[in-house]
Length: 269
Image 1 (tube, rainbow, N blue to C red):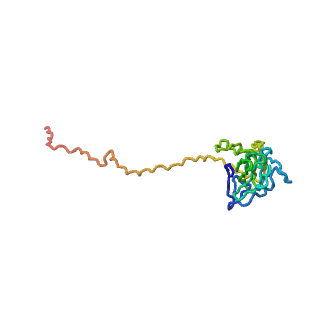
Image 2 (image 1 turned 90 degrees about the horizontal axis):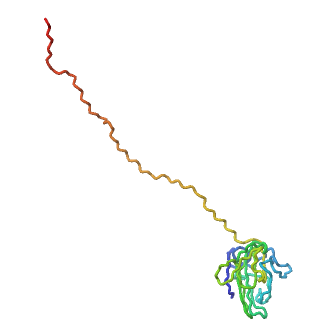
């Protein structure tokens, strides 16, 4: 079994779990193996079938004592890591058997898969990490590199390389692995002279879309509160008028003359 931790991005396609093939930002479980992408062999492969270094992130180099087999029986210093040769099995992963070459005491190799934004490294942009595995084998031993791959038809990159660096961009991860930058075309190859074989291909961009920036909620005018209910006014107490409505009549002064005797004036005679 491999010594690596595997990080697989999975997505359910249709119904039933089956083999994975090249397409979305997640690795899907779907029946069948990789389908033809319309560009058989992807960028970097000649139609005559002779392997040519792909336009992946690096330059083809010696394998540092490793040999590889697609079928577990026939071993070569390099193999085609394209969608026509790497076939997902029932567990949804592709498998590559590794052994030491004759005379080598040990070798370390890694296999990684990415989603890309274009069909070759030049147009790949910053790639999206999908899966990775690494093995170290001693003389006479074999082990397998087992990784999930994108779905059929998606722009993708597969890298087989020397060493055990995980190029996933998680430079501060503390998980026991050495980490490196994500590959980004056209100007940031990361594997460089440790590349053994690479494949770029696909027909559509399956990288996840950037979520739209969250807009702050529009300011709502303050809701007008209805005035608080006033208790009904209590009937007012009538104040007494300033002048009483009924006045006591004032006493009428008497006009009658006082009773008495009147003397008639005497007439002079």
